[in-house]
Image (cartoon, rainbow, N blue to C red; front, side, top):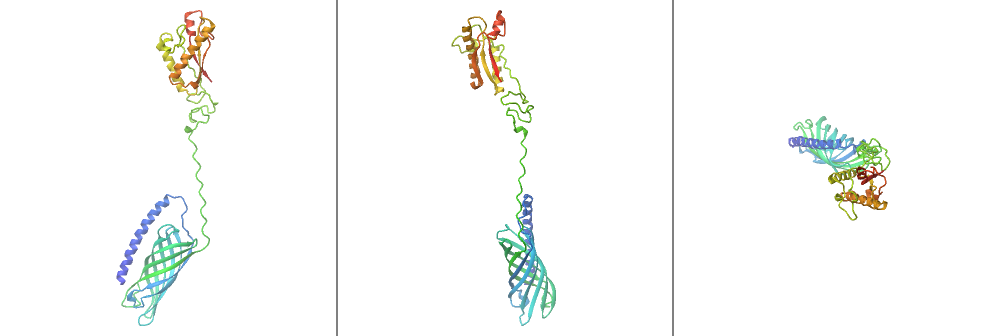
Length: 372
């Protein structure tokens, strides 16, 4: 039995080391991704233990008896604990007499799962075994490997049940034997010293990043703060691409009307414009483009005449000129809310000399007057 037990001990130890290494690798990866404090209790504890021994038949003793012991240890990581321990068992030899062992050693346990859950674990221990019997008294090395299950009962105590295989290299108690493999089952209550550690204070979130100036428009002029060289322009001010006030001029010079046009009821502006008509229409289209590029601009649509005719007639004619340009703008996508009027000023405010044909032609006009 002893050789098979020794081989089993070695195989189980190698398997346990592999499992622990794999779990440690995963735990390390999780730890690297977390900035929280470790979720385990690192206080020192004591662990009184009682249990049963199932002896190697080569010991020539009663096959079963109780053992008891005491461990002192602590967790060194969320999954790993280290214990120093002492335990004792006493056997009745076949044919009379006693055979006792006092064992002193160190044990490592590796736990799986969350701290407060039922946690299966693997354990390995090395120890010195001091044996006393009628044939011999002395020390021999021993090792143990096993598995168990642990559960937190309170903040300061755990329950632990554990099964293991212990190999004792005692070759003196019986001259014909050179080692023994025993099975053990133990129950422990783990009691920690002192007050539990206080929960870590919550980590304050980092302050929000300062907004990017390219996403801000402090004066609401349509130019972001990065590009705005005039950051505090009054509301409603027309600004250029640099955010500074800009005077918008919509020049309709060249858009002149034929004499006494448009007639009442006339809606086709091309028939009312002075030749060349295409040049006048191109100027009106440029005005539409300007209004589209400056969506905050509002204009007054005003019409004028030359001095030929009565004041009353010229007033109505100037109003028709303003109206036909107004209709042209709205039919090309300019919202009526951006247009004031149309209004007529008759022969007032001439820009040309009404005593000449060329001057009168200049006065037969319509203006888009920007409203600031």
